Image (tube, rainbow, N blue to C red; front, side, top):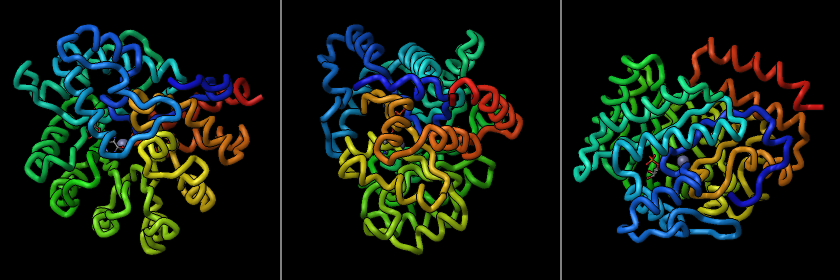
Length: 348
Ligand code: IMP
Ligand code: ZN
């Protein structure tokens, strides 16, 4: 991690809604995996983007390919999922929605079903071991893999949603935004929505996606990942902004990820400000805390220092994230109560 956040941001109870599992693996876990698989000849500089470094979006997606080589067995997956959950908890995250793309690894016998089962098992073990965090899972569709795989993934998500104590709550659409078109994935996404899965879709991550975003907003999604190029100042449109506002669709905003991945020029130019000033629900998230060498406390601190937000405003942001989550009402109520209890200790 670049530099640890100040105590206020670490003590702040937080909600993380946009975290890709394999992008969230910490430096320590990565070192361990690298040492276990020396034959792969991977160095840590290939799996993380440090302070002051930036990469093109394309280079960021190459990083995931390297990480996937290191995490290709059921054992690896269980280990990294538990470690990621524990790290979020240690950073003061009290509710986490983790997302991951089910992967098949013929070499090791890992199947997509086993992949989802293993993530759920890691969540169960963390709960049993008393890790102080509530975790839910979003099954991810990688847009690169096309409509058939998307349909298969939705079916998998649907099966697990109905059979696993509410751990699987939704579906994510992610992957390289320059590959494929959302129109091909629309039927699968619509089916997911109809069967009760919540939808968190990466939209307008790059400038060329205007038409796709218009189409996918008709579903509509329950949350938007990034939405970097939605607004007119960066080539989006007022019409897109109006649609997002009318439907009150929360945005998951990941400052460091966007700056290091070069879709946003600098922190002060981040679209957080545009939406925040409109009073639109914005949730600060990490995206890939391992790859981008950050954590959620740092992201809150960065937002505060860049946009001049008071501690009170930061508290409101973290609390508002509860309402944007896919947690059931009973759990949301518990989280609000927890925030209320902690408020006098943290905000003094
Ligand atoms: P995994 O799904 O747990 O394997 O996490 C890594 C995957 O998340 C990548 O291969 C991408 O498909 C997706 N991902 C991570 N970060 C981003 C992003 O910023 N934009 C789009 N997709 C992403
Ligand atoms: Zn993402």
